[in-house]
Image 1: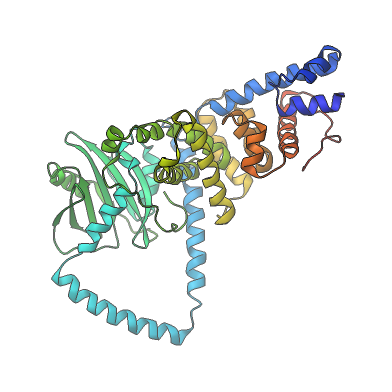
Image 2 (image 1 turned 90 degrees about the horizontal axis):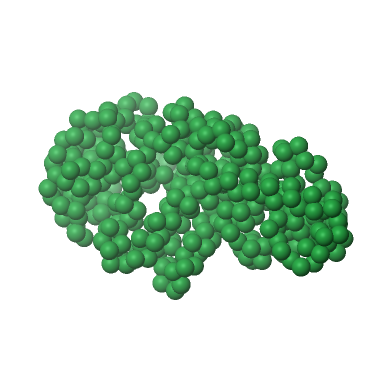
Length: 250
Length: 191
C-alpha cells in the first residue's frame, strides 16, 4: 500500500483498522499524522451532526420565520406555476367546463342542503387516521411555525399555547391547517377549513372518534377527539382564538 | 406540511389512534421513539428543517405500512434511516421538487443553526455547503452508521466511488481546520 492509497482509505474511513493500513502507518510518519488529523476532524464532524438542528423551540423567531417563509414561498411559486399552466385551457373549453361546473354545483347544492357534508366528516376522520403520529406529538411547535402554517390558509391564532402538533395538509384540494391541541380532557384535532361550508353544527362519530363540524366566519372548523367530552369547549376556544386574515393562498 | 400535492394517499391498514396502536403493537412505539434521530438525519440530507419533517412524516407512514417487513427489532434504526433516505431521494429526484437557490437556503439556515448554539457552527455550515454527492454519503456514514458497502448499495454506486466521495468530503472540510488538503489527483472513482 502506498501513501495515496493509505490517505484515500483514511480519508474515507478514519476509524479503519485494516491491517494493511496499520502496517503502512508504522513505517510512514507523514501518513500517521494525516490519520490523526482525519480522526480528530471526524470526531468534530460527528459532534456537529449530532448537535441540535434548527427549529427545536429555542431558535429565534426571525431565523425560523426565514426558513418557514422560504418553504412557503417555494410552495407558492410551484402552485402559481401550476395555476398559470391551467389558465392556458382553451376559451371554448372553459365555457363548456363552466357550464358543467354550474350544473354540478346546482345539483350539489340540492344534495348539500338536504344532507350537509356527510363526506366531509368521513374525509376528516380518514385524514386524521392517515396521520397517526399527530396524536403522539409531544414537542410544542415553535409559535412562528404555527403562525406560518396558519397564514398559508389565511388564518391567524391568538394564543395557541395548547398546540402540540401543526401541519399544513393537503385536504380536499387545498392546504389547510391541521392542529392538535392538548386539553385537560385529552387531545383534540382541529382542522381549519376555509373553503368548506357547513350550514349548522354537525356532530358525528366514526371509527372510534367523536367529532363536530361547525360553521366559521370563513369556512368551517372540524374538531375531532376520542370522546365527545370536551369537544364543545375546544370548538368555542378555537372560534374565539382564530382570526381570518385577508392574505391567503386559498 | 406537504410541499407537493400528495401521491395517492398512504393509507394505514388500521384505524385506531397511535396511542392505542403503541399499547398493542410495540413496533409503533419503537418507530416513534426514533423520530428525533430521523429528523436530524433528514435535516442533514435536505438542509431544510421543514422539508426534513415532511420527509420523516412520509417515511414513518411508509414504515408503518411496511412494518411486517421488520423482523429484527434491533435493525429498526437502520431500516428507518434507509426509508428516510429513500423518501428524501424520492422527493428530490423523482418528483423534481423545486429547490431554492443554495445560497438562499444556506443563508436561511445560517441564522437557524446559529440559534442552536455556536459550537462547531463553521463546521456545520461547511457540511451544509458540501455538494449533495459528498454530503449524503458522509451523513450516512457518520450519522447513520452505514458502512461503505452499505452506502454503495443504497446509493447504487461502486464501493470505490463511495470511498472517493467520502474522502473528498472530508478533504474539503480539512481546509476549515487550516489543514492542507490531500492531493486528490490519485483518487479513483467518480468525482
